[in-house]
Length: 394
Image (cartoon, rainbow, N blue to C red; front, top):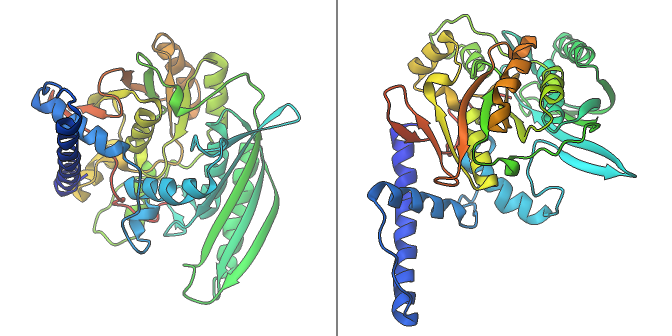
């Protein structure tokens, strides 16, 4: 988040809060309500931010912008104010990575996603394996064993058949590695200039065999927050692969299927509270989702968050915080505090979790707020970004 973004968000929160305080004051005079004593200045700011966040979401823009698809605050507002408001039902309301369904006593997970990454081919992967792995991961963090996928292609007139074959072969290899099958699909072609070559939509079905109930709303004070490995690899890889910046770095996307890692974690710690894969919006967005859903505070330590030196260096040159940068092979897990070391040990026993680390804890104080203890010893609020400094990364 830039200083300007943070300042505009705080200014908006304070302005809206002051307006509500003015109305509250009128009500107090009319109804004789007792005015509560003022807290210290820092707590007043936190309270104001919290109140602003809790107000009914409303899309202020008249037209869709790129920020609405970036995974930050604008995306969240769009989802809650438009889609959730229209489609509201108990299966959708948790807004988890996959919906949990029960059919004749069998628990299933269902998810869908669309992939519009630019460029289509990048170090460490391409749009094909990204589509498979992303869908597998959404099912996995729901506690399901991924089984079947669909694949829908929107192809642009003039797209090379050789590139399409390369994408499809990559999808086939990724599906085989994850142990899933692509069992149905669709193909559409649009006019030249309308689809950046190739877009892919996938849906996935998985079987929830374990007796687990996962969800961000289940986080409790005292829980530990774990990340499975270094963050930001994918987003920075995509940004550099576009060739728009004169920056060279030995960075590859971390795209990978997480079902094996999740199985190891759940076998060792069945009491896992929640899991999310850190895609659009990065780890910072997930932490805010947890804080909001469970009405808890979150405190994480900058020194404990694993970031590769190359990613940190590129992020500093770009003026980007790695906390907001997308991953495609990393998950965030919330586990009971007493199980944290056991969970980390289980994850480190899997190749994709070798650098798993406890990055923070859930607490009762300052519910709905995520704070970062910086390397300099201070703390700062980690809020949702309005948009994303790295558009079209998945």
